[in-house]
Length: 345
Image (tube, rainbow, N blue to C red; front, side, top):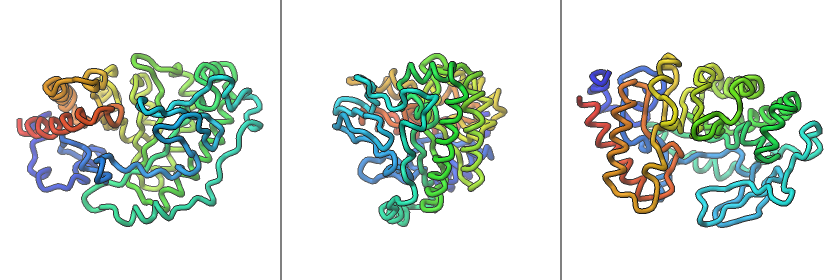
């Protein structure tokens, strides 16, 4: 397989072309630092994930705590915390009874969003050599446990499946409208949905429950995105290999965040190569204070050597971005260097 990756066409291709060829499984495969494939913020180097619903979700920023979003969920993001987390303490639960969920929240207005800033940003993006990504934050599962708490959500999936389906069906329709507006204004190449369906070594929902409640709704949501000619990328940095065939069936093109607890090689075989696995890096193994450079580089080399021969793998941080800037710089440099050596074999 590695001989197939050594093709001079990749030398003259744009980063955009390299990534699209991998997504479409057209070959040859390409391995390297993936961030140049995307339009990124010049100061941070982080890919733009343009958010059609930022004003609607209104989630808190870093360094702020106790901030409600448009749904009524209270969010905390202390300075020393990697990301925002809903605060359900002291009765901070939005949906207290899923059988009457309509009484507890209204869907944020999408008809009067101010697109001025997004339109101006998109006008400046490089669409010739790089890809444009938009995001659809807070997937169906994450939406449910943000509204009602983790334990309560899991219980409701099992005890009140019809009401959970009804609530999430209405949310799916809202997300489709948001995605449509995003596509109209931003014309992205890729839409990224964020929904973690598992823990480190197992699914959080039984696969049967996921298939009965979430699968038909995701088929509708992702089906719409694909009908607009946009690639579907789903971020899920957890164990989820039990539903990898289902991911293909619902229309996911790229599984971003696949962790090494999943059997990457087996997933490629089970999905017939129809799913690009974009991740594979074990973040706890490299993303911590005081990690030495060689530990990071050795880990990146090992993952490329293990997964890249499948032809359906591209390395990236499973968590999308590491916590520590030093880790990112070293790891991306090794992805580029060792990726080139891998292709040259």
